[in-house]
Length: 106
Image (cartoon, rainbow, N blue to C red):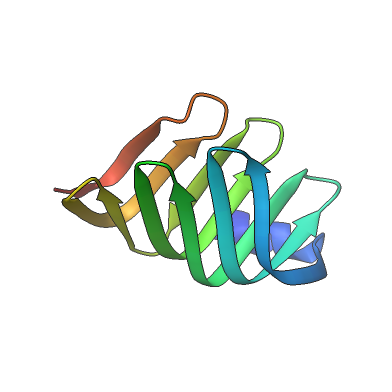
């Protein structure tokens, strides 16, 4: 949690609602802020990552432009086809389109 507090100091508000990174994933959020120093987006509120075969809902997500990965935390629900997975953290790789469960259960 100290990591997030540190990042908030260098982040400035830029907008809300919808950001699309590639053709295979769209991120919707109540609001997001961007840190040009850290090259990250912090999404908060009702966050939805929507891909072709999945959707992830979480209260907080971080997109790292350098790593090309989205990390969700604070509890999430992931729907892949007809299966629901819930947990605390999940990672989505924007370049490969793969997601990795960090802490959760099917």
